[in-house]
Length: 234
Image (cartoon, rainbow, N blue to C red; front, side, top):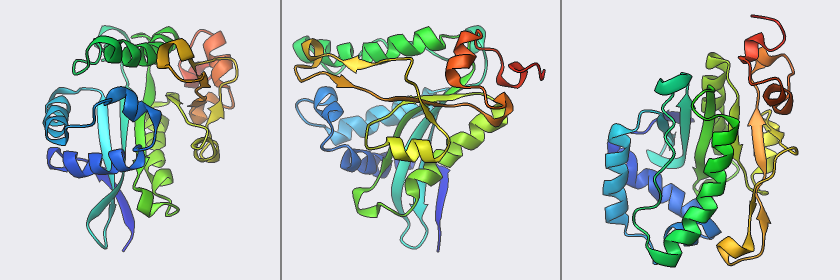
């Protein structure tokens, strides 16, 4: 039986994040977010509370219908309204960290949040891919592409761009489904913040088909018009 992508429910929090932690176990971000390890019980409860009141995030799961196992997950933040009802609220920080660990992690995340505020703020409609993860034992089954297509479909229906941060390893997947790497923008995690050598984070975006070939750079330079109106189509 095939793989399928479905909305994740509260009961799925733990198995969904089993996939997340397996996929990211060797990634530096886990060390920054959870420098003393992850209390999975507390994490599961915290995510259940977050999902219960989050108004912009849509977490989806990829299900293997032969086994019933969740083999992939993604969270898409969809900001479909401009203005005060947009839903974007800059996070207050990382409440479970303290001292230098908190300062380091928030220094990393602040640079990402700053860029999103500059590009979109509360005034622009867009879709943001918060996280995508595939079970390491289930690679090369097209799971990442299925999870990506869900967000692409949403952005196409809304006629808005998608924006996210990638990894170097993830770039081929993004490029294969129509994302462009943004060379006019730069995001670098600095050694003075991370305690590790400088790392440039690839930034990618995908314009909807209604933009008629307009690049993300051209869209921002034109003042972020609604994509279907960017070429005088509105």
